[in-house]
Image 1 (tube, rainbow, N blue to C red):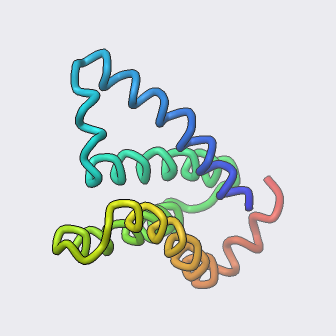
Image 2 (spheres, one colour):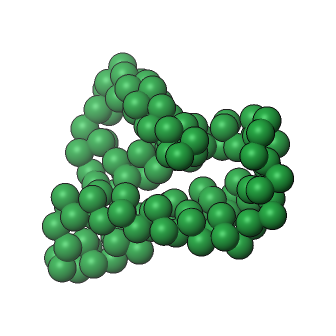
Image 3 (cartoon, rainbow, N blue to C red):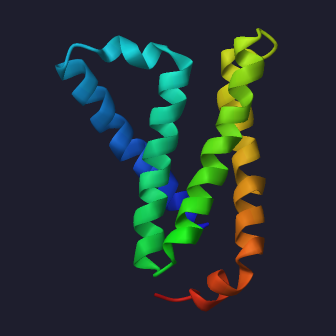
Length: 120
């Protein structure tokens, strides 16, 4: 739950910063593209999660795996979206739903590391 909270903070704070930065640069319309929006959102969530995992003294391999699990959950949905088989709203919703079990698999794979990091 800690990582989910860190991801939400990253998504909210960095999401606003990204929107502001793109607006100031005159490229706010980039976020109209689903692919860009999903990558920016995943990066923002991953940044928050990475900060928290570093604070909890996780190893970089685990941090990279957790970020990859999150990003791949969205990336696999882009192909059916591009093929017209999945609407834009479903990519975002289903991506978030897939992200949690994908991250749980990483957690199970590194069970000992997460048990050792029960307190900072």
